[in-house]
Length: 267
Image 1 (cartoon, one colour):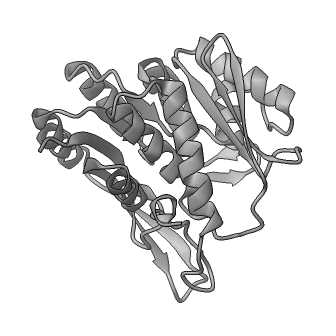
Image 2 (cartoon, rainbow, N blue to C red):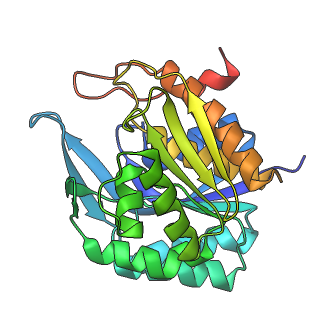
Image 3 (cartoon, rainbow, N blue to C red):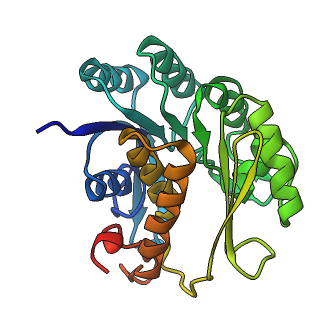
């Protein structure tokens, strides 16, 4: 039996809902063999309102992980939390060195306000080194505004403007996750391939149990690409997958509720 293989190049979420844990669960649910190159370990303090701590992993160790995985070959790759310019540049070098043509950029940014990221230099590096190498980028509204330099996005017009800029910056395709945050009656994502806009709509799901939804969506796209689907087909199938995962999200503790990664195949 041969399995399709995918690499997730991202941080570890100790609580299991997002990051490489979400990616591996999603890969498994989509019949893909997942491998992980950890960039950081994220922990939560149960004695301080679940406040997050991020421990970066040495760049040399990250490179060793990538070399291990890429030596056996992958059918697709995604990145999530990268954490530093050095790690971003390392990822770009490895994409070139191993000729990875199915690379999904989930441009995870840690924000401290609606208009500000904690490490703006990382956004600049993602724009320069990763967008031009991606087959698709999957930003949320905040991340799309940062990548495209448009500022906060609240409308469909704003989404389309940002999508055009992101493709002009080198991404072959983009899907902007509007979700329930957009001023729209539906939960909306916008796909753009440089020629055509495709609106992906679902009924809004009234839940706060959506931790890991963005990682899960990007990992589902990666899985579908690994299986040979087109980019648009991969996005549409991933939208159905993550919508079901959000619908069946559940309470982990008083602070967080993750999506249910196995919901699509079980309900």
